[in-house]
Length: 178
Image (tube, rainbow, N blue to C red; front, side, top):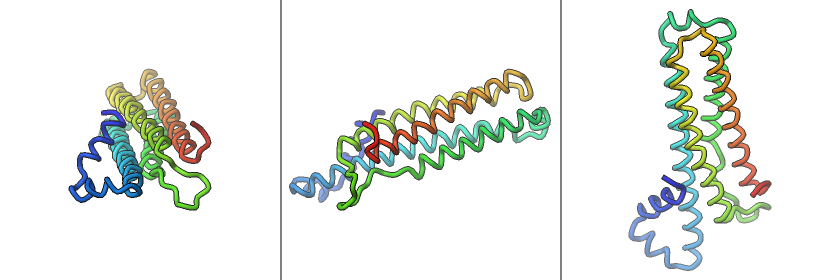
């Protein structure tokens, strides 16, 4: 589903009264922004759910005490790093600014900027899926092996890259990037 598909889904959920009011000139522009904001929120919630599933996948692999015992001190630290950073990016996406600017704010959030933010959010869905796939793969690797350590390090790098995408999204809303 693309960013435009989410917007169309939200538009389709409008009530009859909202559709009628959409013909009022000033209200129409206001409502379009609100629909974009709601679509943005839906996309971000989808990303959050995918990241939570990724964390659940990796934590489920270590519910057994025997699996935890196989981890060296370095691997245990890697595991903690992965879960901590997954928590961090999940919370950052969940609490990300929804693209609202007040009437007297210095930086205005216009429709084109909301569309850019929504596209960035949609791109995060693919990245979240990739993180989930890597978490599933890591969960299947025998803990304590060199392959496990290498996969965990690669996953941390991918999570850090995702974290920088969240920063880029915030820069778009602040007007610091296109």
